[in-house]
Length: 375
Image 1 (cartoon, rainbow, N blue to C red):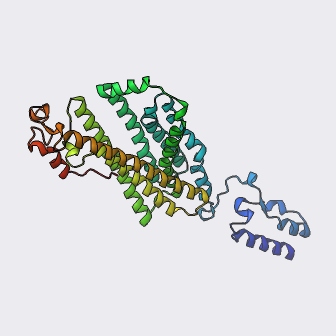
Image 2 (image 1 turned 180 degrees about the vertical axis):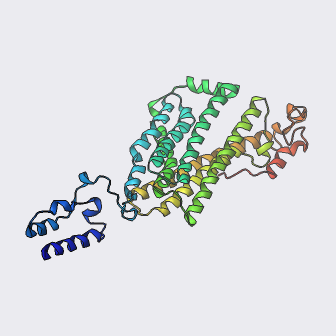
């Protein structure tokens, strides 16, 4: 009886003790054998049985509930692997395949290829982030680029089918095939640029994986950057729509609406979008619980992507400024608006319709607006 009492005491102490996290008992369920099995057994047999009162057999654990404090939460590192599951190969493919439209028409590599690659790569990251339970603002980061890519493709298709000038340009580009294989370096470089634009989304998806609500300075700054990306998305969309509708109506220089504040809202909006996305990626990198060489690679790639796209946009802004100055600037033949359709007051939405300021209308418009960043 003393042996049985000692064994039961030892078993009770084991039952109420809390095993360490590294112990395999944390992954098992305690099953207590019924005391009825001990009845009618000799004391020595009961003592041996008492040593086995705790048998960790998950298959026998029916209806046994582990206390809430002992439940093991999903490991964040495994969730981060889920968020990074699409990583380089799938993203590279998503960026390269749409860009290959440039082999058909070279201009498509930077039009439909650009929009499709952006939307598709962002969609892959968005799905991985949702499955991994990433923070809602990290999911919104990828959603902004999905919307941008889809919006750009719809806009390009509408412009190509409605505005005669773009119809003619597309036909000319379609007929001038040239050396298609010679476009390979250009297409590959575009695909790498698009991959760099998607890189910040990977960092965002991994930084807050499994986090339902994030707090702190980094999280607050990340929210501001994602919000700024959506603002840039809207500004670029409105700028493209306003200018294309004015051009389809036969208007020349567009100076109303957004263009009364920004001379190139489409380019300025894109710069805001991509720069905010890159800063958000940098903040996500800083918020990572652990950083690896792979994370550093994504950060470097996102930096190159931000530099590359802003360089392209600033060069486009510079070229457009030059063309507008030559056509509408003071002293050019295009600045003589009197007697032309711009002097008729037909375009009432144009701030300077009716040639209100005479030949220096363009110069005054330039002085009262911001042209964004250019080289």
